[in-house]
Image (spheres, helix red, strand yellow):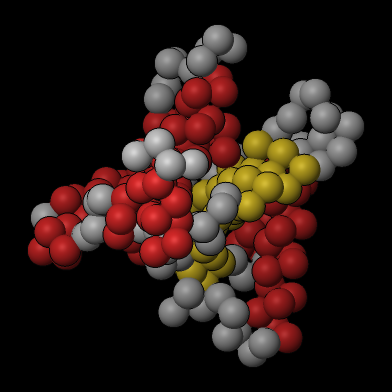
Length: 177
């Protein structure tokens, strides 16, 4: 059963690192959060979208994370992340209804905001407080850390690129172009 997480980004970020997020380190903390969700998604098979409020953009932006079933969205100055989350829940439920539930077995909204949680429950999506999602992140990390599959994972570059690219890299290393 596919699970689709719609995550209130700053809500989760502040729950993960209370009091540690500042204007100076916000970008770095946001990237760390995205990386955590990408790792979670890879290990669990779930899809996710992380929604952040934006104070600078006049229009909503959506950026998929390359190679991962994770997206990152920034709301506009006029429309909060809560409103975008509500729209995403409605869209996901509509898709599930059209596909008779085959796209997502479960839609989960991760937020501590009561209005967001209440709206998701009204729409038949599950709600999850950030602290519960953080517990899920920790469970996945632990499962991956003790997995026998870790020994079988390919960590060298030659395991990750095609043969032609390897040949080009080898020629470059040898100074042949």
